[in-house]
Image 1 (cartoon, rainbow, N blue to C red):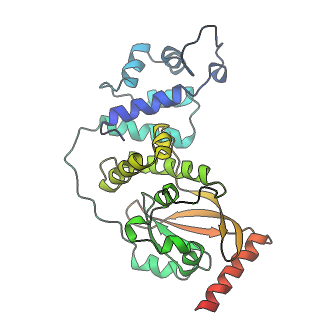
Image 2: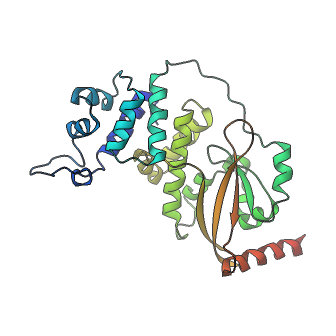
Image 3: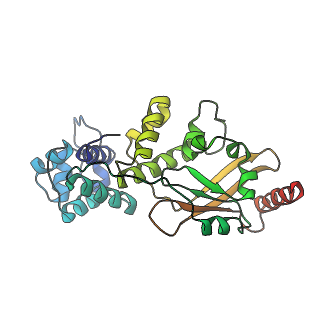
Length: 281
């Protein structure tokens, strides 16, 4: 992770420019192309800015693009809504003068949220902005039994999947790691000086080549919903949908709840897991 917001903005634009093929935006590829994706001058033309101005942006120099310029670049690069928001976040950080590091309070789960958590009849947990699992209800504890046994400092969704001893045969593991890395990138961009984000990215980049490669792609994703597949030792294979709901208060933790589609074997297996929990109790 770069400490310079302008460099982060530059690298994000560069990675996205090199992924767009000329034919994707109505340009003829032409012979003897030596660059992957669009050339800088081609993107500048599509966005309606000068080649020199865009080049300075991608070099991380002191330029302060307007909202209109950012939107034009996003349109030219066929950005998703998430990528567009990320671009504006990076540009805002690049425009903001450097400040002294501010104090960050540890993420806490409000008592009312803890009470709500234990009334949920589906596996539910509270996940911090940097993917640390802060709390969970009993059914989530049974669903993710091995994870719940870890020390608090190790209870991180991405860290667990990237651990050298993690089960690499897990269905959708590669896609899940990529998705979680993109979520982490979004959160780090929103608060690049947060010590937990800096610590986690640094640790993962040093110990995981897979993470370092994914991090360099500058993919972004927001924590909203997804799907998880796992092979549980008690009930077998489960495919569950998850949805994330912001916890009231300061931006950060979200409540993630897992559900199975009605009338499917997954729903039956989830009910079986709940009954086994009741039997244990």
